Image 1 (cartoon, rainbow, N blue to C red):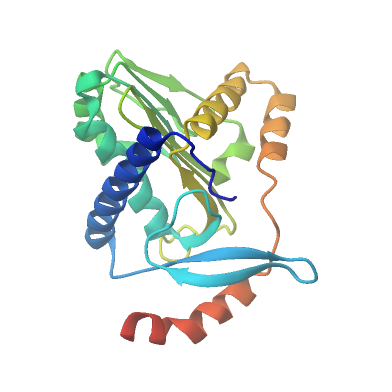
Image 2 (cartoon, helix red, strand yellow):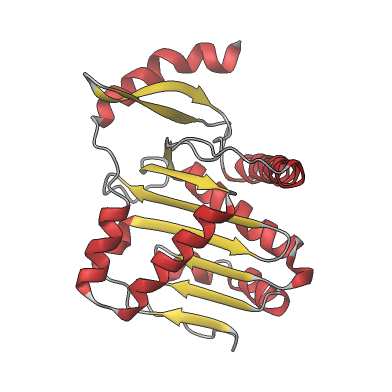
Length: 238
């Protein structure tokens, strides 16, 4: 995806401030979760399809990236941090979790969030117990959605969305491979929020429609892994 042009100077500065805050929080979360890591910005080549473009330490917004499970977790935690630290004006947080374990290990965190925000909606493959009254649980999630991760936070101050899809079946976080993007563009945030909530109807055709909206490009993971292996040493030593 390409970055959108923002004509209003005030809005442009606001997006820049949010972007800088996001990057700072993301870097803090990344340090907690793993050693220095990376994502790969992808580009489209008319003759060869999707190819790697460059290694980047912090994913730039509105660009398609290839990354591992550590980066996915760090971005998700970053959005939760933004919600927790900027929830004085309330707000709405939407999560598509990969299982009950992810919720249970951070239950106190979500309880804190529930006290500050107007509404939290959690989509989960597994049932979750002991939810505060203002946390809505949408369960069971359609099996096709199990490979997706979705984080969306919006209030009067911040609007951000992160969506990605797991490309392999690995359960080890370091071996998991994702493709996805994050955005602070209000139009994208509102559009994805509306389209995502259509899924709560539980109709299979709606789920099929969701997958068509995110027709992620296909590529050979091995080609990107080879690119990473040839670039990684110079990337972290330069």
